[in-house]
Image (cartoon, rainbow, N blue to C red; front, side, top):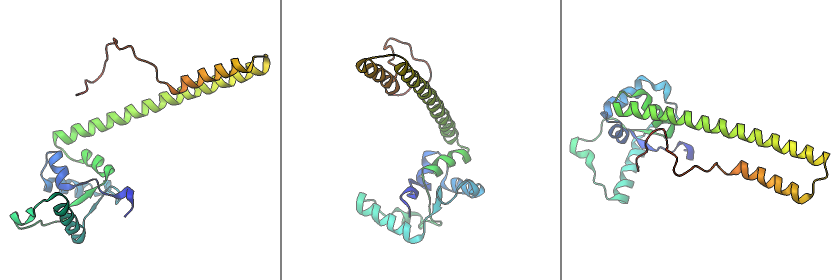
Length: 175
């Protein structure tokens, strides 16, 4: 198994997080199986499940709770981070819907950030070109040119400072 495909979470843990029954989660996945390619989700084999149980018991001292209800009927689904994300889009619980909305907002925020940085990088490249033209046309000293390039590079790497007294807008983040 590739490192990229190592599961992050099992179906029963995700069912608890998304506040749905494990059976409902499995049904939603099976109804939307085309949304879950092998690098998003797979079903554990009996050997994998036994190894996982043994590992958890040895590592964390977890007892064998499967025998309380006669064991498990179906092997758990294992989800990668992409599968966990996709799962939030196929479940109907309020928590899953909110998670999906938050994921979409995060993607939009990342895209906007990247577009802003790309336009700033383009502007800085234009400034460097103009300085090179000025350098060729005039007899600027090497010290002045170095200072100018250093200032441009500083603009490219440092984010603008925010006024600490500035009133923030947007969503309130929990501490």
